[in-house]
Length: 450
Ligand code: S3P
Image (cartoon, helix red, strand yellow):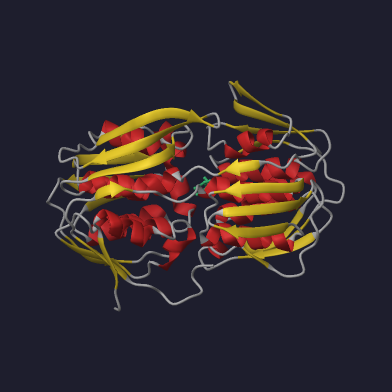
């Protein structure tokens, strides 16, 4: 749980070439889902390569509170002995999801169609985020939610004793909302239908099928129509969690902006609902190649090779790509600072309700580091200064947001003067080995006392 401890100020200084291999940790989205779906099976699910970041550990603790047996066997090996669909016990304590929007929203969905009551809370960042987007569709199943004003945590959910299946069009592009509805649909009789106008990450659909649920996806004029047949018996699985595409973004972008760099980031999933950043970087003229392109577990996987790219150019990122790179805009805006010309990012209103308001957090920090940034409600433009021209010399607020902290640490590797963040502790939510991994490549990130 981040945000409860002492802040860890960090400084990143200009460094020499980044070189070597960056083995990033397991995927956060898939790690949460492995634990939750494992808890909804009868029998034992084995998980290898689980992300042992704070967000996922909070979900593991939550699954224990709902009655599953979750065991850490060491070295990223975990097992979950589940209680079955509809088998969740009522937790005795408040469920603290720390910093994790994915954790709390998916778990709310998973418990909302069982006759139990649970109270959820989180850190200051999570307790400021909107939950109405999840509790609105859960109410259609018959669940009731009592939270703070604006639909904020702490919040109590009273699960539906006699849930009915729903047909729901997700009003915002959000895999968390889609997944919460699907997980709730598991314990409703009949067919639950979720429609999304824009495709978002599809891990829940793929994994539900992998666990034996009957689920179909149809592309129609209204969007993706996902139909789940309720009350399946989920079958325990052996899951190998792929490495996190969103974590890979940090060493990749660091190599692209740091003179002389050549970094290999092995085994990264290129699921089209996740890999929009890499396409965007290539459109900007980055030297980023996919080596050893292959298929693993039905998904495209490659070793990413990122080299220093001195001639980056600003582009307009197509808005229809936003969902496939929604977590990568902070670090993309850092790369944009080192490009020639403007990089426009449009159709990205969702960035305002992430762990922080990411447009505001990045715009303020980039301006403090010498950049010009324009912004509107759902767009922003970074005016790039080109390689070697970005001043830096700023201390930036990370606002309990791991991706803001890491984006600015990447930036400091190539600015003229160092970049500091007031608190790097949130990095542990998703990328606990960020500092040693980047140091191993040649980065100069220090923990500093202000
Ligand atoms: C996630 C969905 C996205 C993403 C988050 C992980 C998921 O959130 O930003 O980091 O695992 O489903 P939204 O659903 O809010 O877009």
